[in-house]
Image (cartoon, rainbow over all chains, first blue to last red; front, side, top):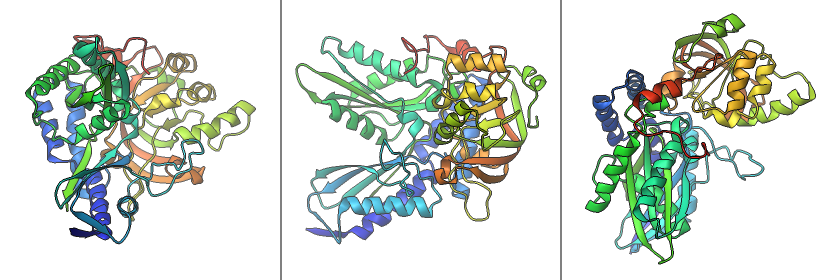
Amino acid sequence: MREIHVSAITDAVKKLCMEANWSLEPDMLRAFDRALGTERSAAGKQVLTILKQNAEMARTRQIPYCQDTGMVICFVELGQDVHVTGGGLYDAINEGVSQGYREGYLRASIVRSPFDRVNTGDNTPAVIHVDVVPGATVRIMVMAKGGGCENRSKYTMLTPAAGLPGVKDFVIECVKNAGPDACPPLILGVGVGGTFEKSAILSKKALFRELGSPNPDPTLDALEQELLARANRLGIGPQGYGGDTTSFGIHILTYPCHITSLPVAVTIECHAHRHKEVTL
Amino acid sequence: MRTPFSDADVESLKAGDRVRISGVIYTARDAAHARLLPLIEKGEALPIDVTGQIIYYTGPSPARPGTVIGSVGPTTASRMDKFTPSLLKLGLKGTIGKGYRGQPVKDALKQYKAIYFGAIGGAGAVLSEFVRKAEVVAYEDLGTEAIRRLEVDAFPAIVLYDCHGGDLYQDGQKVYAREDPYPQGGHK
């Protein structure tokens, strides 16, 4: 049994939160460059160029890429041969969020209750998903999830008869519904199968795959490419000003489901796709 | 263009025009608007005089020591649709945000002569460069959602909706759309 003290987890989460908000990952920067090579709209190109400048300014000055520094979504793959010592795992993660947001000059965007809406002041708590996996390491994946795009995320329960065409139409309808409000170019995380809640969690986890990388399942990869091409035919474009780049990528994860069900969840992510991970 | 705006300033602008705004603008988003509305309904004075002014829908990130403001990009404007017509009626001449607005806002822009500007969503670091001064003028307890008075210099914006019914989103998207970009039954 390997022991990992909670302070190591807190320190890791703190660093991930700050760096995610200051420095876009290389997959995102490559996506901007690819889009600048294909975008025909002058307004769209200008938006993409400014967003690249924005990324560079955020990184060098250590200020957030976007003022909405998001709600922290934290996926943990906890090796079953790890013993976390010195406190609770969830408390350690939230302490990391608190330190990262306060010390990193990141915006506190979380209210303690959806009804009284009093700000917690340090962006806690995070939304935490823990999977227990074989091994003796802890993989921590953090996303700073913006609210404007999250508000356009959607779920539907299709019938098995609606099938694959129904799934495709729903995903495209979600892109239309997101429109300019969700800050395109968008990235879509799509969870298909499982149950109501399983599909939603899959839709979040799908966003952690490297943008531009193929889906390991060739059938799903072909589906992703087909949906991406169709999304980019909508003409919404960067910021909705019109253009070819409405989406940077569509990532799909699936899970077995009941004979009666076809759940589909779509998480809408903006171009401020701030994700970082570390393995302890 | 310098704030405050006159009706003539507003009438001269068309959807798609790129402008640079200098002078004073005010920040307000969901929580501040929710406090302004009851004052308007009761006919009481607002903590800011909106006549000729512009409201920027943003909640900035905290300023690092020695800087004016943190990241300061626009938030989704449609959440403020419920409040906007009554502010335009009081003489507000512009709002800055991102995303579509509802028909009542479009109608009010025509009726009261005002502009809906766009700033690039997610470009908060770049946009912070155009803010020279920032101070909280009301509702400090709301934190990032407080009303701030910003002094901006050549703040870059684009006219999304003008006061003549012009709409940059429609104009821009129809050039590139090979499938209808609007969802069945409207946006939800």
